[in-house]
Length: 449
Image (cartoon, rainbow, N blue to C red; front, side, top):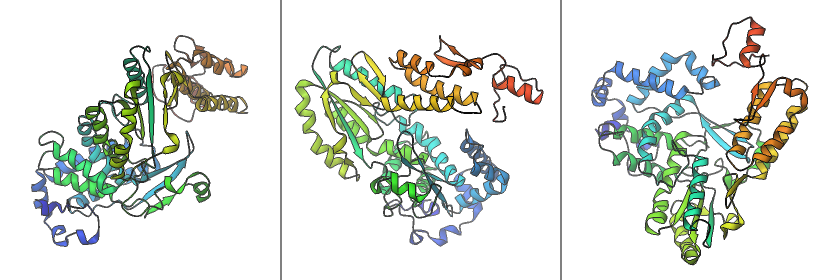
């Protein structure tokens, strides 16, 4: 069966030399029998995969282009999988400036289908193996869960803020851009091999290992379209922060679902070494690690750093010495856009100043966009009300120009903006198109006046 699936498990390299032409000539009928399903059943699964990939992104350009010829392209992708000729042929990259300038790498729709085909099973499987103190890219966890866990650690180690406690913050340098493709493939294959019945039955393991190789070894920098001017790359992205100039075999694409998942697993054994073997209380979110240790164990925690550097070096990861933080918890700690102090937590000034500038910009617009005001204010108020920042939330509300208040009102119970009667999305659509949309109708469109 391994010959039919044509997976080279030793190195995972995707080269012409690794492809056995004789295996590609295996009869399609035999491949369907090997996959233990009929052609119709396999096609139905591929169509379900398309709809899963389109979820919340159906209006994207590549998604619409695929849907225009959905049957033919799905059949083509189905037989490319069966004949082992599937490849990710096109990638594109762009820059985002919020919260910082960062390079994002994405792929064609067929490539996104591959990511979802793997990750729809890999994510729930990996979630059972990941450390409970890893919070990124996991269902039921996330940013606020990581902050709350950190506060709980500080309270627990300091015995209710009564004993001296140190906060040691560690940051990695170029975590995604320096990732090794082969090692990322290895950690995913370990998850696939771990499950014998659920998630990855034995009959399907070679197929998913082959898909993993295709997804990770697609050389995104080698066949990439830049959708942001090159000048911005030179101005805002340091060479070590980009994968465009990395040699083949190095560099994880931020924006690809499979890379987001694999980078959770990338240092999972190191996190478990710190928590289980070294008995360190910590929180990990992507490349940010905060260790909470009592004062008497401070030197012991620092003595672990040389061993930590050695273990990370095997994965081509380095510590960022400029972002190392080691102070008592009373001085406060910057973590994930929040400033954490005993008994209170504040949104950091960078994000709050961005909120002020956004409201001021909306106040000066000649043609008022009510939906933009409501969406912008409520997004920032959500960040503020989840922290002890009620005064700053009210201050932000008071910055809204007076002429806005004939369209919106401030809900003091929920601490957010709402539409006044006659100015909601449905009310404006009813006036413009003579419709009869009801208040509970959830449909939204950009054509509102």
